[in-house]
Every structure is written in structure tokens, then in C-alpha cells.
Length: 315
Image (cartoon, rainbow, N blue to C red; front, top):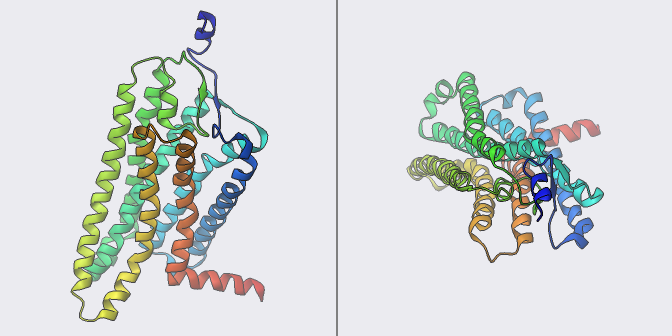
């Protein structure tokens, strides 16, 4: 590369997103399931918010946390899917440098926030099952608001160094990102500098956030299971455990593809690039799509209000 070309990329005004390298011929077909899942995620999460807002009996800690999850899911998938679809349909590959860093920040910020919300949602059944007499005094609206604020601040602050570090690196190799969105390591790998600080901090965030959150969730469920197994009858145990089933399904849908995507991207050097990108999309889109379905099917109050909403409109 010549000196003139090199200097052009020192502070690039735009990046070029390649989409899914190697699968360009199949973009139209790939876009169909992604567009469908995005539409389901938007419809499902907005429906959850509408039901909780319109039904006073659902104005409680569990459903407030569920609303936080729905808002986070809407933001998480909207950060990436519209741009990805514009690449597939319109060949709109350019993204402004600042917009790229902003997208990178919000993607990882909302991912951390979602993980924190799952911890908060594990705290609710823990109190309800292990200390039911104090549930209403512990999880007050004020406490729920404080937990929500802590989740937002934690996600916003811990991810902030991603963008600050990425902005300071010189980019003199290329401005082409072999990805469909501005993923943290996909961006900083373009820098012509020692990026070990960004890499190590990224690993710290992955393992500290995921590790600590999973630890708190595991500790909550250990206490919940101990309380469940102490119940006198099998029916009581199954009924009590059923109240936690939707939360456990949502946790698995979020953490398993997330960890698989992040670890294979960093350490799976023999895994094809298009597989990395597809898994990253699964991580960002499938949980927002599945969460309202899981909670809608497993939570009787939401299911009943949803049926009432449609039957009421039909009459």
C-alpha cells in the first residue's frame, strides 16, 4: 500500500461493512429468516410492554423486570438488524466512523444490561420462594427502580472503554470490516497499533460480567432448589419450579449462543468467518425473538391477558 493510501486510513471517515463474506450470492435468502425473526421480536416485545401497561394486576416486580428485558431486547436487535438488511437488500455497506463506534458501544452495552436484568429476574423468584412473607417489603417499586438504574449504569460504564480505546487507535491498514456490524474486535483488529489493551479489556468484560452474573444466578437457583425440595408434596414442588421455568429457558437462550459466539470468534481460528458472523447474529436476534414467546407461553397471567386482548378485539 502506498503512503498516500496509508494516510487515507489513518482517521477514516467511514468503514465498509462486508456483510457475510462468502455468502453474497445468498443474501436475499438469508435476509428472509432474519427479517422474519426481527419482525417477531419487535411484535412480541411491544406486545409484552402493552399487556403489562394495560393490566394493573401485572404491575409488580417480575413484570417490571420483564418490561426492562423487552426494552433491552428491542434496542439490542434494532442496533444491528436494520443495517444488516440494508447491506443485503440495498448494498449499503458504508457506515460513518462515529456511527460505527456508537453502534459498537450500544450493542455491547445492551448485551451487558440484558445479562444484568437476568440477574435481577433471578432475585425475584429467590425472594418469592425463599422469603415469601417479605417479598412485598423487599422488592418495592423503589427497589426495582434502583436495580434497574444500577443495571443501566453498570452496562453503560463498563463498556465505555471499548469506544474510547477504539477511537484512539490509528487505522492505516484498511477501512473494510469483514462483518455485518461493528463488533468490537472486528473493528480494533483494523488498527495499526498494539491493541492488546482493547483485547484484554474485552476478555475481562466477557469473563467478569458473564462469570459474575452467572454466579449470582446460580447461587439464587441453588437456594431456590433447596426451598423447592423441602416442600412436602411432589405437586407443590412441580408447581413452584414451574414458576422459574420460563426464566431458566430465557437464560439458556441468551448465554449459550452468546458465549459460543464470543469464544469462537476469539479462539476458533479454524472456524469459517461466515459461521462466526451467523452465530453473532443468532446471539443478537434469537433471544429478543424468543423471550416474549417463552414468557408468553409459560406465564399464565400474560397468556390470559394476551388471549383476552385478541378475543376482546374480535368481539
